Length: 294
Length: 295
Image (tube, rainbow over all chains, first blue to last red; front, side, top):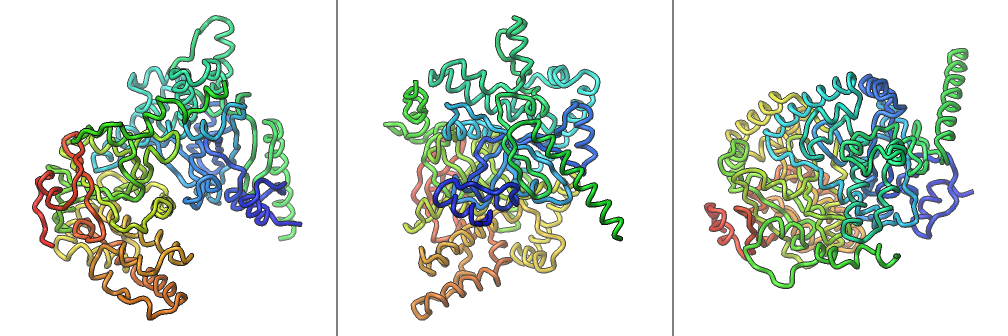
């Protein structure tokens, strides 16, 4: 039987071949499974800060990012990169720094927009729009900006505790979206990238307006629109999307789970959470056995 | 409907992707960066008059320019890019930035250099810059004052002892590396060398190409002048050994090495919100009000 590495190599040459799951993450990243603009939901098990974020947002995940480029689509790169909102602004990060880090212990869910019209060109358009928010760090003045951003972030975090994420977002600043995207609204960046790119096509009559519905990841907004409470999608509502909204969104399909260096194929949220429970049980059983043997 | 959603065919998007029918120079920066005038692996050299960091670096490296970066993405590369993006080493690490952001800084002037060698095809240039993205690391996030103090200390050291010597001493000693903003041109230099070496190893480029991307003339002179005396396998071995032995020296390349390189042509100057095409160093110095170095 072919190994996963052979499958990845073969897939790179001859197109997809039935892979074996679970698969080592290194093989997964070299193969054709990840696509640009895939959404990554992350849960960092080793960070107190991430635990606090999860606690206050009521979400299983603490962070969201988007796949920026994958080596099977762009041969001049060695590895996959993600675009994410961090304290100091929007940045590109090597995906290996999340998936291969044993200290950070990330659990990652990969979700994907799978509408017929959402082809590779659209995927590239979404990430292209997100790159507009990347910031320049030319001199020491940026350090002061970062300090200011951190203070603003702390203020937002406190307001979020008291008022909830959406009201906090309204309160924190009235500036343009690019300046509001920070560590606390990483999922908002993902949502904004999808929405802005699709809106660009709609505004330029390259796509019908209904397509916007396919890229809004907060289910509550559709309910509110159906009840006549809102007529369209407000910037604050979109930027205030949480990791939990993305996890629950039916607009994104569940594709993979990355846990402890292995990648599992999952078909639904239920499958994803069941898998984690199963792995936790196995780990606990393994630990107990090791202790008994010791 | 399927015709309607083919984005690349739409006139508006074609407008984003192509040069205008008539070009007027000097051209506004916004118009320039949104079109395909720049190429992958073009080198950007910047100077910022009236800025302390820029002055410190220019004084330490005895050159006209204080920062070097490389073109990472151009708008014509793929559907979706709307600007020209750079890859550069700055104080917080290796970053990708939007060229338009440079002009948010007062007094910023940029000169653009391009390899004069026809063998540097777009395929090779894309790999050079793609290889550099692998250097993106976690941010250092060290406290504000320490970062500034470290930069000031480094610049004082390099003013007294010379920039190359300071970088080499720190790299060899280990532990306390040179601040990223001071090795920006070394980062560009290293990117070229590591990217080109792959093509030499694969036999897609002759080993002599390596010399043409080493901007420090003294360092380049260490490579064989006549490669034909060596077998293909020996040539690859020499290239690998050279990179292994002189990694630190490559990283210590200064903006002045790039400024005085005969392997790079000057192609544009961006100053005061407009872009001028240029053909030589003298023109660059005139437009940027710099003192030209001889040779």
